[in-house]
Image (tube, rainbow, N blue to C red; front, side, top):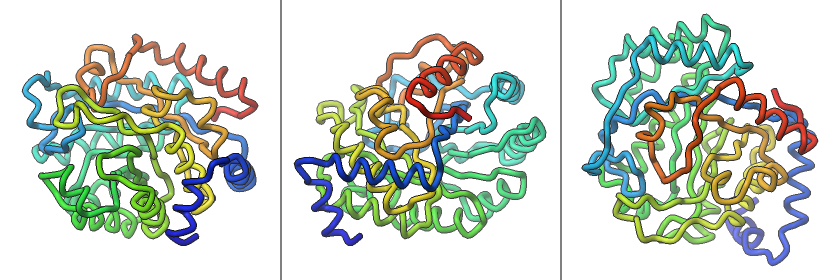
Length: 315
């Protein structure tokens, strides 16, 4: 599809036929299985100044933390025992993160029988290569917006060119490459959303997280409008059509503002579940969220029941 065609579809008054097509493609390419991933947010230390993010380094109210190696591995073991087979290790972008320390954690979790996804920001090509050699199979690095002007306005700490270089390096190293973007950013139009979708295809993304922008009260975008969940679901559906066999999660943000049932009907096949210990997860606040106490085994069982109730198969 061309940019013009994507814009036309995003603006349709009745999007139902497109949702149905996206769901048909999802069923034919990835089936009725819903993959459940466990996310461990092991540190909120971040050197970036992203203007939409609650853990950006200019926020004076952050209570910084970094989980110990033992805490991370214990949490991963509990998640694996509860049935998870993919562990997502996520943090802010921390230039002082010890590479060997992180690599040893990746190896240990691999040894427990789980796939490791890293989401720790832009790194050097050498670091990306190192973590791939240690056993990291997937890397998630959202591009957030394909518009260089909007990117520059939101990221005084980086450039879209640098972000795209990292994503191409990740792909070339053999990672399952993940990217994604937000719906509702200031200055965004249907044209820029179409460019975001085409960029996912150009980058050969095997997973893509598309969620609504949720303003954080302690950021420069505190008073901006929240992203539209309907437009978010339309973007997910078009992503399914553009990259048929990709893993498309129902993002946590979309679950907060719209509920997961509708999102699964538009082509999504993955759900992420936080397993971060209670003493840390409130401090990892990229956007405001109501957080329940973590009970990894109980939460996993409940999520499986919800997925089965939708006629899908939890795996």
